[in-house]
Image (tube, rainbow, N blue to C red; front, side, top):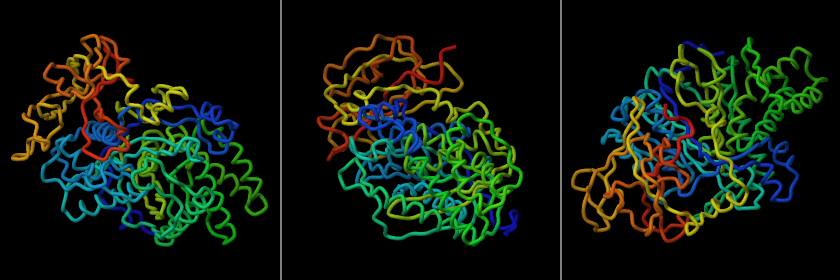
Length: 534
């Protein structure tokens, strides 16, 4: 066993966190009804309850801006302190133009920052974390913002359809972090495996069902063994695995136990003193626990059996609430679960194991050690439970319309807003040409490449109040309404509503998911789900 205080952990890690997921969700029972399959196929067979659906023109830039804003605000961090910005995604915006470059100006981070997009399916987030860790360790950068952002999409009626989802997580990485430090040692495995892919110019992924499951299990086992062969028997408080759907994690655990029992090895490295978690959510896993105990009762002692049950209930199951309610968030899947653990279940000095799988395939395992007094950084902040509880249900027909993104059926609405007076408010400064294109403020390049004249800076408050009755935009291709003190607002917004700032793709003549040209974004205000006017 390695000395936990000497060499295993660095002094670099997570200083602040943020999370965001779209407000709209589809209930899996409603999807099952419309796909003519028994609901249990999704709710029991996959252990899923619902998944999130991006709103009209909401993309990874939209989601990344929200998650990153929360991370900076939660940590009370000046964006100019950020000199590294890394975006992990497999939901490409451009084939060749980094999302990190777009976000660098939106966040107004240091102009001398390093920016990078990391693309390695669902493991891209872990690689982004390691990249940032290494650059901070070498002194090349001081503080990095990492954003994990994806939209998981399958074709309608595809077997993967119930596992869809969307969301973004964000970390600020620095020396002497306030939340958790990262291990210096990782388990790792990579090979060319054709388990999953997404064709060029397609939104929808392809997956080879049983083969993909076998690949996931095999690679998670290999990364697990590689790490513990290096570090020995480390007391782990919580285990977190990339979760395309929760049942897949349980399949992996079954295989892990089988392998370890057959080799007469420790089947889970676990802390001796586990706090009992009282959460009705855990009852969803009772069947799995009983089946597992019955299956291995002849091979392991009663004390081992009891420890196995306690481990599942307290160290593995709680964080599976995240994929159960949000669906597969690809690169954000693992890290949003870790945020949920930090917000709810772990304590000072606890150690978290993570297994990060990316199809194609690679798997990286590592450890996080929770910092003393870390809970102070979560006091008063928006938490993942807030997103689970505050949401908007859509019906199946609405889901289909959003899925195929019918632009012509969507009404674009404008309104006047005023700043909401609050110490929590922050502001975004954006520059537009006279035709409404979002342009840079970088010296000598602060003009529209399309040849449009003008460069006007506008300031948008994060929180605003709708002051005028919304009006329908007569010309959906005219984005010069800023000069009239108008902004785009959600069609459901009402005068007096407290609104939140978002950024959405602007309207174009064809489906934005099949765009071959220039993409642009514009401010968009939606009713707040989390705050009300006092």
